[in-house]
Image (cartoon, rainbow, N blue to C red):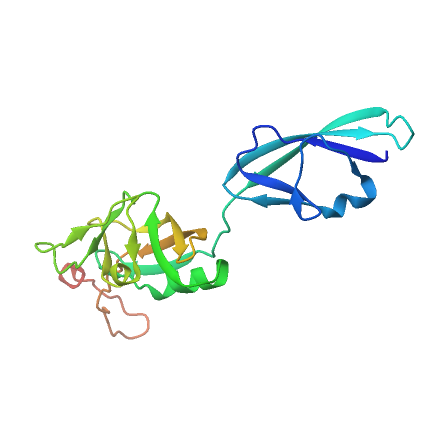
Length: 213
């Protein structure tokens, strides 16, 4: 094999460049120059390229085909892990989202949007109490650093367990990253006072039901 050509029809997730210029679909490239071919992603999604191989002879004989599959995804940040206790309100902070932005795409943090809302509780902005809940946070809306610093997660009454909330983050340059907020709600533990009895060796003790109420 001495040369290849690529069919780039209907590629919506990016562009191919060869030697610094836009690649012309179907044009032949020497195998020794493949390192000069680059793909620049522009959107998330999947793409398939049909690659045709040609022999290294005078006629450049067609000698086979292959499919090059490519998937473009957003870079993913590490999970943001938060915890609270059963029936306790959890205060959120922008600092962890800003840190996720810095470590994943860099630049200046702009905003996030949640992909979905949890079924195990609700997130509010300016939550004060059960009678003054503030504004409910919604999936798909943009929330700035200032908004995040005013958010609180309120677990459903009696709920305990672990779940995640997926989100997308953006910097001011428009770069996108994905992430998840993992929230653990610990079960409430009831502490019972110690019940003490004193007795001699080989002496029976009568338990009092009132001590266990």
